Every structure is written in structure tokens, then in C-alpha cells.
Amino acid sequence: MLTFVLFEQCLTDSFSTGSTSVSNQLVPALAILLTLSEKKKGNAVAFFACVAQVNGNRWLTRKNAPRSLDPVYQSVNPCIGTRQKTKIRASKLRGVPESDLQKQLGDLKTELSSLRLYRVTRGTSYHGKLKKIRVLRKSIARVYTVMHQAQKERQREAYRSKRYVPKDLRPKKTRAIRRRLSRKERSIHSAKSMHKARAYPPRIYAVKR
Image 1 (cartoon, rainbow, N blue to C red):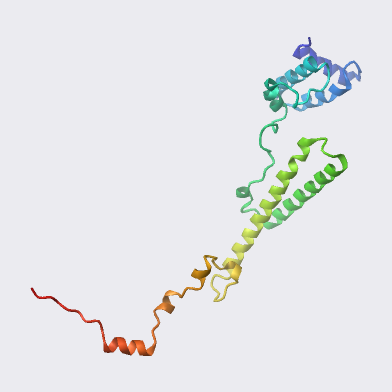
Image 2: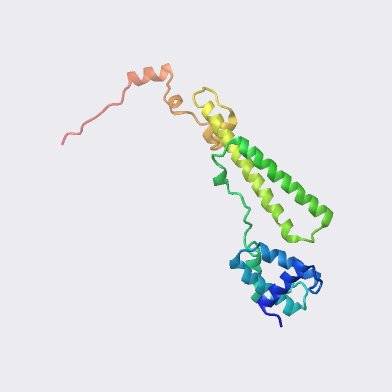
């Protein structure tokens, strides 16, 4: 039964000396251990020790792992069981220059196309990487939304003092409200109605007790 310290030392010695005493399937474990911070290192060592003990020096997939190992999996990969960290929020995109938004949009599209190519060529072997496709699609949509909103705002400022405004910049409201007369148009009277109003003004009566 390997202890955590011996397991880490075994991996370190195997990686540094090129020894094949440790299974080749566990060699990537050291790469993960060396990249983690000291705080997460203990959890990672505990995880790979559990892998060695439970599954006989073979990778223990998360699907058939006991539920008690879920916190350890999340300590190794914080994205497991949580929302993706690469999500772009629209509130942080507002106020960014349009040139920077265009550049960010190009980077997101390039990354999305590479992931789609990865999915076609290699299939769904690495589901964790392909889950980012949805996040990238939503991020691209948010960048487009912010760009279009900024463009509409600039057009509104340009047409604010003009007499005629494009239809897509006018308030939508409802069909009946758009066809309703304005207050000035409702106050206009014909000559006949004005003569009649002068000839027969409203009479005020006072009742005497």
C-alpha cells in the first residue's frame, strides 16, 4: 500500500531517471503534480495514490470512481463539476474599444474552429475539451451583442437632432400606439368646429338656494 509521499517520490524518480518501473499510464501524473501549487499538491498526490490503490496502477476514470473522490477530482481540475472559468461576461465588454472587440472576436472564432476540427478528427475521446465549444459559441454571441448595441447607440446619438429617424431606431411599442395621433394632432380643430365653439360656448349656471 503506497503512502502519498512514497507515491510522489516514486513518480519523481521515474521521471528524472527515465526508469520504467512505474507504469507509463501514470507518467502524466507527475506533469500535473509539478504544475500544481503547493496547496493543491497534497490533494493531487492523494488522488493518484487512490488511483494506484483502487485500480491497480491504472487510470481510474471519474465515471467509475467512488463518490468520495469527487472533491479530490475537483482539486486536480477545478472545472470538473463547476461552470467554465473562460466564460465572458457582457458587462466587462462594455466600454472596450471596437478594435479590441474585433481582435477578441477573431481569437474566439479561431479557437472555436480548432476545437471543431479536433472533434471531427479525433471524435469525442476527450469530452472535457469539447465542452468548451458551447462556452465559446456563447462568448462569440456576447461579443456580437455588445458590438451591435454600441453601434445602435452611436446611430441614436447621430439621429437625435434629425427630423427623420430610421425605423430600426424608433421605439417599437405596439402597432396601435404607433398609429395613434400625437397630442398636437389631437388638439387641432377644423374651422367649422371652431366657429361652433365660439357661437355656443359652454354655459355656466349657478344654483341659488
